[in-house]
Length: 233
Picture (cartoon, rainbow, N blue to C red):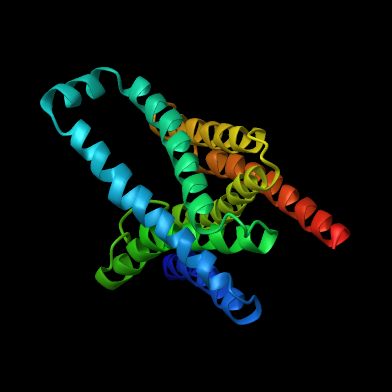
């Protein structure tokens, strides 16, 4: 069962976005550029800016003491400000590199590039390395945890496409409401999941249900955008 869960998690976090990327490169002309921009956005924001900056500010003894004394407030702070800067940086990258590419497939390519690299590095790679060294065999309910994580990564991919579509809609219509919606939804999801996991210690299946609900709403929004594009063509 553990092996199946590991393979399923790798399939959802690595093979699924990889398959989507290959499909886009073969069947959608020029979308490889949006894939690269999406992946570059993740690398620049998360790995080059956010994580080093967070480490810089939290490594001091004073910061560590404050976090220990105010951990719930620290979680709220991260859950609010990380999505704000994340979506603003997404807007900046799209505005600079692909301001004229705002179709649904453009959003799909960017979202898969961003979310696919994120799921591959944060989940897929860790699970693969765990398989190689035999990790997780003695952890209770590890199989169920991996299955939940796998479904969560699929939800994350859908949400990344949804966020990107909202930002592209803002650029296309010059209506900042789309940006505020993207930021607000991501703050809400991050707050609920972070507080639920780290403060209230909710069951992982409760957190997964919340992710599924939001991803279904995002999928409905994406489907409606697809219908609208077909109608206007």
